[in-house]
Length: 214
Image (cartoon, rainbow, N blue to C red):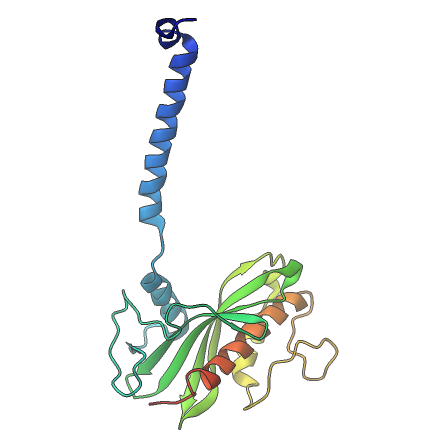
């Protein structure tokens, strides 16, 4: 077959059609991604809405001596956009939050490991700071999970338990059968991943941020 014959053949026409379809699909996927992509600011805004409701809060930058107000669309991550490995968890992001009355939280995004089927649970944890130390956990909100088939069994009572049962220096236990175990029956692995996320978030505020209300 000559080159002239090939360019006039059905096979060549099929190749052109396929290439055209691939090109159009690529363009459409690019456009869709630009519309559907969730920015860091949007993720933070969703977390703030879920945890603080309509309460007015201010997000600060990481200069403790000269705090800089951060734009919600371009928040200043206290991890400096670096994943920080802690015990059985990764700290993905952290923000300093001030309330209208002057109270302070550190809002930490933590991915707890050790979940069902080797998966993980990512949570937003609001940690209350008073007089230069962690004073409690205001709220825990589940952001996402990987491989957690029984995550729907995690109850509000379990999540509220982090606030109600917090004690200085005590980690939430994942030891099944222990009197101090903080687990949901039928979702013990997912519970473990959440415990790991919360314990790591508290340790991060204490060890990396000093737990200080500067």
